[in-house]
Length: 370
Image (cartoon, rainbow, N blue to C red; front, side):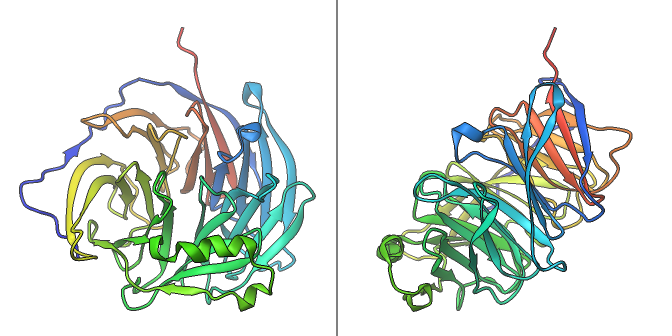
């Protein structure tokens, strides 16, 4: 397991806002009474960069951000099981470019929704418990990964409905997996984290022929030779409690636990001994009152900034790539008091959305500087 060497003191950011950007609330929607756990902009298809989706209860809703703070409802998918509670949703697309939404939650069934006709394209069954996060491979957006309470991560081809790989076993997570992310440029690499307090980095390189085979498979998906990936290439103990969100920032990792901060760190692999290595903790981004689990952050398309909410309805927007870290803005509103489960930053970061425990969606827009 990777250790943190002595003498590597991380640079912590100051909580004094830099006034680099000024945001104001331009809209607030009450979607329903049930908590909304996920909100996500479409970064997969440039035609729909202003579209976003939410997930909460047994509903996935698609909206469009228009000028002047307007939010238009485009469509809504309601699951046949009224007890389903969606925790996560991700944009993806079929191999012909049709926009899809991929949602999962309490029931452990992944719903692939064709947004063209608002119908289920496929239901992916395999996880033995609820699904905490789904992410799409940006370079091949018909591949998604799912992180589950069943202690596994699975790689799926949503076009063919095949479960290609299962990341679990001897070297796998020892508790719920809460978050997972594809590396932005290394197509073989993913990272996952969870309730065993670790972040694990996995490689698909030696299994890539199965990924390719999944696109041309014509037999039943259940007959596909799904492979287990039992050993990660790197295990990091950066946090001492649950790790509920991790995102690649280039080759660095940005992750958070329940201790009021985001941490940027660099995994340093030892090529000869997989799983071994050291961690360089580079920077820390304080987020007060962010001490409950399942609060996740988001970044703009180019990973210049990260926005994270807290349990008091406030949002902290950090410049990720500056040293020392710069707090771009702290967003507060008298009526925003409920825990923010997830934020969504638009392509250029000029709009920030938040989804809350009380069933509300908030929209913040950059105020043009005079």
